Each structure stands twice: as structure tokens, then as C-alpha cells.
Length: 491
Image (cartoon, rainbow, N blue to C red; front, side, top):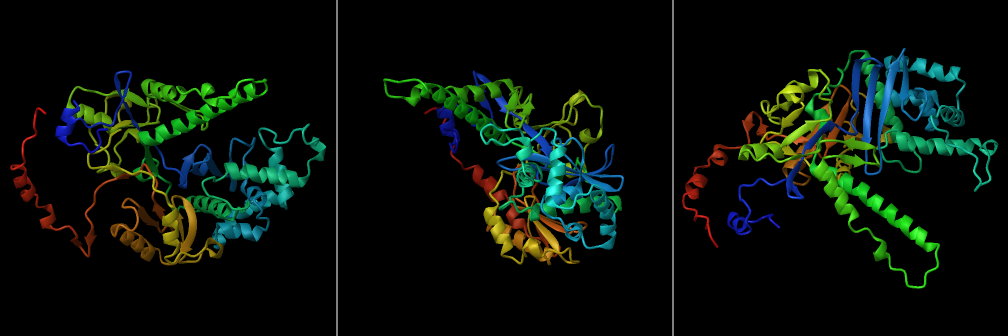
């Protein structure tokens, strides 16, 4: 109603033209949804010197599922750590369960250097000692290590535990792996080749970290973080409440269907029209965000808007909180990081236990929203990106990632990055698409996801800024302001 209105029109509607907006009015109280700081999704992160040894993790997030995959390096061998299994799964057994049974093929997914292969040999020997050679052997082993058994005697099919074949176990275990391991990468017809390459990349990162060729990732670096806005939080809540609404309606209809009815059935009489509105109002008013689907429970997501001054209200709209526990006495997440320059206000933070954990976004900072990457992938593939089935870890081969999903490889990453930047500046793709090259691990990342903090830059070409002094001269606009007609105070 108020969007796009002029100051005089806002005053006619009895609204303050200087009100920044961005809050909700629930039962007469002004509530603002705070921005939530969290780690980046679909990105490989390596950590060293942990209690579990070296670890490489990726938090997969898609519209359907969310999962976390951890690869550990312990005693010179690689393991998958997941709460679905009672023990850490040897990485070679995982490869074999995905259908990659040849040892040479497993090595080729990790690299082509002899030094890389030498680090994977102990894991291969571990698989040989366990007498696991085929896909069925690997799936049987994984099925025996499940925390919750997948197969039970079924009265509907007439199958007992003794009737279950190796094929049944293989199909079920591979479906489970599809749903828990690197779930952000799409699959076609149970083909694990792209996920196996991504898994090989994670093993390779651990080897390079152990050899000191790459540094561990800094969790406080803002390139590894994302900001969750109120829109995405409301979308998650609405999706969860809408599913509850449908399930409740289905249960009501199924109970009535068994009874004899004389009058015609009217479904509108059984729809709880108040359910979605009440749940949204309750979440915003209390600040408790409960998402059953992803087992997410957060407190203090919303706060009362501070009206002490205009600056206080504006600062509340740009406030950002971290999921880090306030009671933990660790200086790292609280300290000022060099990557916060131009993104986070270095001085506006509360005193006490919340110091450094509650921050404010700078005035010229922009938080991106998610952009569909389907057209972006097609465009990048048309600029010299080769399919992944031809990738062989050559000296000039760089894997191309789009929002964490490998789509191919290129032999000229600098040229491809220049093309993407040129398309962005020509407005052929979204203006907030980011591209960067990581030469230490030979990959190129193109990112268009939401929650990235962006700061303004001046583009410099050959040492000369592309912005001129004429563009910065604001005196004509200032002079024109003196001749603007006054805002009428009464209609």
C-alpha cells in the first residue's frame, strides 16, 4: 500500500515520510526480524588442528533437503562421518557403494599426481582388508552399520529378513546415500559420477592441507558467511505451516470419508482458515522460529523496534545476530575481521556478552537475494566450458562451480572470469553475480545465491578509474534542490 508513494501521499495516509519501514505490526507492537548470520552453504571448508583431526565439510542446501557431509583424515586414512551410521565410514567403501569399484578409477577422482595417490593407498588397503570388492559388498557393509535398520519384515509384501536380496539392499542404500551425501548436486538415474568427483575434491583438499599446500579456511572470513533475511525466514516458516495445514486437512477428510453422509460434502467447512495467519503471528510476536522439517528451533529472531531516535530505529533495521553462543568466552567470532571493511559497522555493537556477536550492516552495504542459476549455467557452458566426464586433473584444467555445483571445467579460467564480469557489467546477467578464481585448488566459482554482503567498488582499468569527476559532481543536483516546490502540509 505504501510502496512507491511520494512524501505528500504518505502524509495524507498519516504515515511518516521518514520512517525507514522494514518491520511488522503484530497486536499493536512493532516487531523487526533480525538478520541471521550463518556459514555459507554448498561450499567446501577445510579445518585443521581440531580434536578429530583434519576435517573437510560441506553443508548442502537445496529446495528439497539439507544435509552436512564431513570427511575426516585420521591415522592416514579418510572417513565419512554421518549420524546415520554408528561408525565412521571408510571413504573407499563409500566410493564402491556409489558404483565406483575399480581402485584406479577411485584414484583418478582424487587426482593424477603420485604424491596424491600415495596418501589414498592406506584407505584402499583398509577396504581390501575388510574384503569389500563389489557394490553389493559395500552396500551390505553400510547396511550393517546403520543406526536405524532399514529393512523389517513386511506383511504387505510378504517379505521377511531372509528374503531380502543383495539387489534390494543395493537399491535402498544407494537411495539413502542420494538423500544424505552432498545432496545439493542433482543426480540423474542414480548416477553418482558428479558427486564422486565432488567427494574426490574433498579428499584432495585434505591431502593438500596436510601437506601444507593450502591454508585452512577461516570461519570468520565474511566470504564464507551468508546473511539470512526476513524473507527467507518467513518462506521457511510458511512452507512448514502450509504442510501442517495440508496434513491436518487430509486427516480431517480421511476421518469423515469412512462415515455415511446424506448431505453433500463441503470441504470449506473443514478448512482451518485461521491456522496459517495465527502461526505466522505467533512466531513474529514471540520470536521463536520452529521449523519441524529441518528441526530448526531459534529464539530471539524478532525484537521490539527501538524508537529512542531515528538513528536507533534505522540501526535496528540493519541489526544482525550470530548463532554463536553468547556465554562462550572465545574472542575469534567477536573480533573485528579485515573482511568486514565496508560491510559491517566496526563500532556499533553492544557491550557485555553480546559484544561482537550482534552487529550492524553498514549503510552502503547491499545484501543479495537469491537468483535462479539455470540460465546462468547455460550461458557459462556456452563459453568454452567442457563436460566433467572429460576432466582429468590436467595442469591447466580448472573446475567451474556455479553456486557450489560443478558444471564443467575450463582451460582458461582468467578468460572465463573476464567474460562473466563483462556480461555482468553489460547487464546480460544479474548485477550481483560474483566470480573468483582459487588457483591453489584449481577451481573457478560463480555465485548468485542470496545472503552475500556486497560493498561498492570503483572499477579500475589499466590503472585508470572508469568513473570520472563529472559523474561525481553533484552541484547541479544540489542547486536544483533549492527550486523544488515545498511539500504541502495539509490536503
